[in-house]
Image (tube, rainbow, N blue to C red):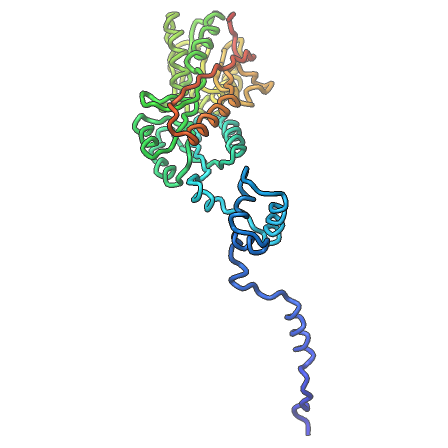
Length: 366
């Protein structure tokens, strides 16, 4: 009678195909297969001690070529990579360096960050970046900096004397980049902003300009304060009073500040001095496009920093270029020296800028 097929002892063809397919698949990894490979596993595979594995992965440590080859082959087979955090626990170094920087300070800081990161990595350290909206916000990130147990700090933001003392209390060396502490002893690398504010203003006066305006920096910017202090010192000595408007260091604020400056003055100034290049470029575009002025025939505009766009043919800005590479090398060297030897006394290094005579301003003889 029709009904169930006779039992043959064999599985249906579909079941056999599924079983074969399942057998062809790799076995699901067990928890032990997914755990992180350690130096113990490498030592076991290579047939050596854990300390031998550690020596092979420690720069400068003693290990024969045969031992190193055996350990590296085992590490490659297992996919092993040394744990930097664990190594730091042994050496009591995190190999982390914090860079504290204001995101609105200067457009040339990407170049500074690249130089700092490259130089620290060449010395075996990694950079943790802490960006501030304003220099005065530094208090909000100090606890985070300390919590990461960094070996040292480069601060391209203004620190109060009390904040400098906090670093000393935590045993963390700090180097101030492009600024000085007020009175507290702290290592620092800085361009001579005051001197080059003097020189730039002197060259403008020597060219015969009779009226001046200033597009100033944010009020908490050490760099901007020093630059404009140098400018005002010269202008005052020559009997000039220069009205000013604050910008935020951004390109757009240069044009906005120039418009406000012209409202404050009954007569258009002959020369406008900007606390950084980005604002100077914004002021140039506003003067040309909105006011129809010829630069520098009808208005001289100068800046500070020497950022890349300042050299474009459309601007050829007259500015003061900072020696970024030399300054970053000095900052890295000073910090690493103090990480190795915390007893070293604070040190200050001052660098000269380079006055770039562009086509945005009429300058008198040096």
